[in-house]
Length: 68
Image 1 (cartoon, helix red, strand yellow):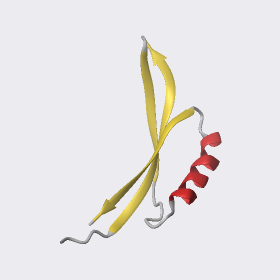
Image 2 (tube, rainbow, N blue to C red):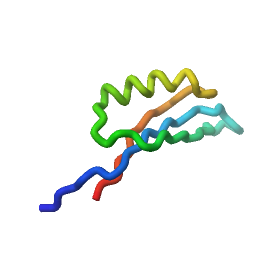
Image 3 (spheres, one colour):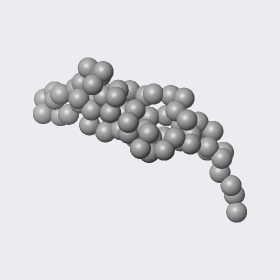
Image 4 (cartoon, rainbow, N blue to C red):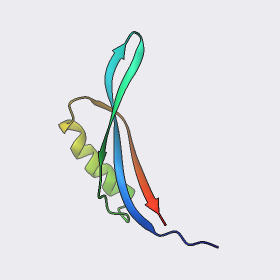
């Protein structure tokens, strides 16, 4: 069985820019160099601190990991 080791992690914020011709317009903003072993509660705390600094409202926050 293969063993996966996390190499890098990032958080991606999806921002709501509004609508154009009835279609939602979104933008993503990534925060790189997130600790691979960071607890979900710690990431939520950081995300909650960063959200008010963003120009648009946040619709989603996801963590992405790369493993080898």
